[in-house]
Amino acid sequence: MEAEELERRIRSTDPAVTLRAVGALHRLAEQVEALAVTQARDQGWTWEQIGDALGTSRQSAHAKYGK
Image 1: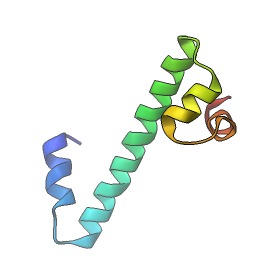
Image 2: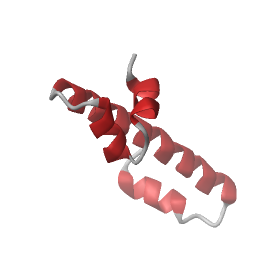
Image 3: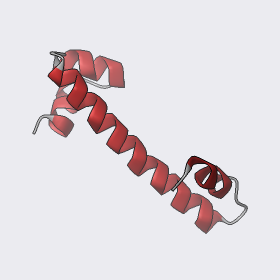
């Protein structure tokens, strides 16, 4: 879904359309976060640094992405 289409859907007055758009945003954010964590680990970042950057604990970051 392109950014313009997603923005249009987010501004919809139909809650079903808006909620589906929110779901799409959540999925996109998860994908971007996972890529950023992989890049950080590849560059030698610690789980503590990653957790700090994400606003969470190192344990939470490791539990989510440390596979």
